[in-house]
Structures are given as structure tokens and as C-alpha cells.
Length: 121
Image 1 (tube, one colour):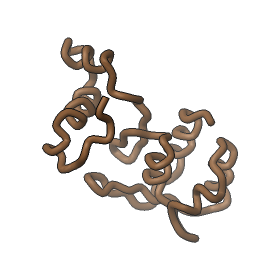
Image 2 (cartoon, rainbow, N blue to C red):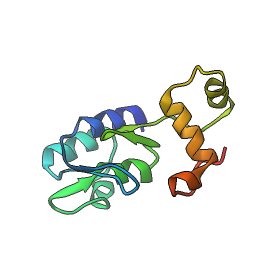
Image 3 (tube, rainbow, N blue to C red):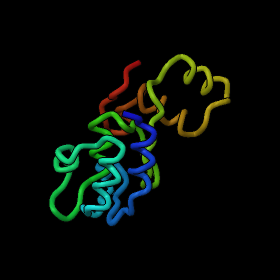
């Protein structure tokens, strides 16, 4: 599966209801058109069914649980990959983005964010 193609489709779907923060979610309408777009990039009907009901499904839960995304901001999903030495060096040298710094801080100091680190690398 092409994770970027899946993210592109997920991010293109119209979000009906969104909440950020620790218990973030983004609900989209459960329509034949939305399902067809996801099916086209390899997401099975059974997978979509796990993350909603007959009216809506959560694209955040679908993306995070299946490894298609590892970050969200402003209702959009992103896949940055593991926190590695390259990321650490970019942040230390002041060459990283604000998102890079936040990801590194969350991994190293997860208790500050009230969460358990999911990426210990």
C-alpha cells in the first residue's frame, strides 16, 4: 500500500466534526463515494467499518491504528516516520521545524504532555 496515497485521500475527505487535543478525532461522512476513494487506494471495507458506524467514521483512528500517519495538526494527517539520529541532529542544530522539535520533545518528555511515548527510538 502506498501510505502517501492513502494520506492524500484521507486528508481530502470533508471533515464533518473535528476535535484536537489529547482525544483528537476527525469524523467524515460514511458515503459510497468516500468508501470508493479509500477502496481505490487499498483500504478494505472491513477496515473502514472498524472506525465508525453507518453515518460517520474517524479518519484519525483509521490512520493511526494502521500506521498510515504518526502526527496530526489542524485536522490534517502526516507521516513523518521514526525519530532517529537525523531528526535529533536537525533539532539540535536549529535546522528542524517546529513539528520536528515537538515530536522529539514528546518522545523524550512524554509526561509533560500527559501521554506515554509511542516512539522510544
